[in-house]
Length: 637
Image (cartoon, rainbow, N blue to C red; front, top):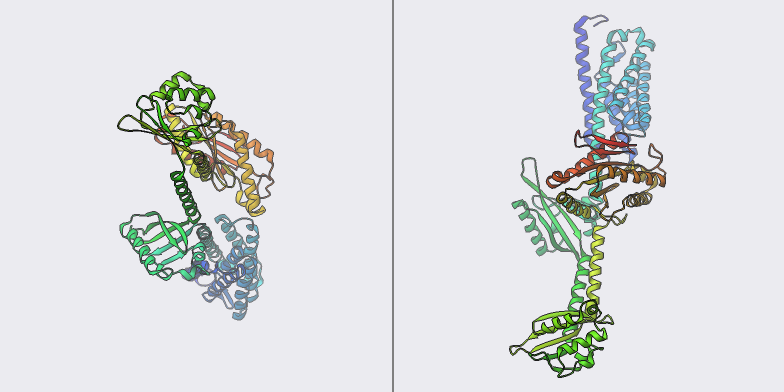
């Protein structure tokens, strides 16, 4: 060694430090492996557990220490303490440092005090790093800075603390001690950063799975539940999702129904063919189930994922509509109809009173012996059928009289708004029989049903929160309008709009305020377009889309700038934004002709790329995609 032993001793130091480094890295990796288990516990418990692991890693490093001088031990105990401070905060740092310092005190030696002081400094540096990154998640650069700070502290301690100075520790092993502590910090920090990223991704997936309004579940190859969401536990009256793990439908429902579902699922897994929108009835609820096979990396089917939607209310509505229709048909079959018979020459040979009463203004002309032309002329004179006044009456009388002797069904509206159904049938001898029914109630019901259907269609195509077009309707309109623009060879522009820092807005002001913010943004977008063909849609979450048929990129830029101005005028306060108010980033794409014919979805990709670039460049700006170079044609901050 440098102090008394030559190069062989130095090589020995490096070898022992290498084993020490491996131990510290292994300890951090073990925490990464088991940290997910601690997510289910409280914040305090997770921090304490991390502190204990880090303290244990520091103690293990001391046990593997190199005795540089009697009572002076050289090791990598400082790296776990610094990492505990940065990633676990004061709580983890306190537990880790307390354990490590207590053990060092028990070991004793001439440099005990110097070692304890240095450990306290290392933990303090980690806590300082924690507060430095408290408003954001640490990144690799933060870990690198932490390692440099730790290295500087170690060099300073070896240069200033009396016992270490007397033993010439800095000259003897200063470089390997500092370098390997820094390396251990970087390696351990990298592992912890990756662990945080995995925990975040897992948390997002678990939250989305558990909070879905549908019934979600995953089953193994034997149709046993591997995991379910909270809706499934409520459906089958379990308290936790873990209680359903390992169960099958045979544990939850009647034997015949369980067997039916089991065979359906096994068929899906055996054939690999998904089952889409299958009707099921469980616990008195009507369900619409879709089941798809799950495959491993080798393509082997290892289970099944299911999504089930509760359609009980929709089923009840459909049943009510069917019953109403049947009731209406029954009423139609039993009402007293008007009946009339005309001979082959068009003279009325028979009619009942109900027939005359069905036509209150021309009823006096509907007598036996009257010709159909005279009856129709009376209809014109009295204005009994208002629609006839808009055409040449004599031509209409001649045409209607000629069509008497043909099988036909007519629905006519009278002057008072009543409706009549006229069903004419021709007998073998040329006689025409007309059956007249009052279908006023039927027509009104039909109109009401049509309006209801239109309202249901509007509900299905409208975002419930903002009142604008939803994603499903947008996709349909996008395909239709881009095809139309391709046929006409006219430009078609698309805006992708994303609210900046919307998650921070929700976290700061709450979801009701976030919902109101979405409504204001959608209002500003609607006010920024002027033509009926322009469509504003909620694309998903805080993202909106606007398509502008027959609009150039320049025109789209004008619309985007109008929207940005309107949103700025709303001046929605946003303390979590660098702009102090709610802003939006906008990406624009435009295409014509061949592009729209062959790859209309390229518009979406280009607008999304421009939006991403706008976000990357600082948000609160408008970028238009360029087909020539793949970058922005124009940007507006």
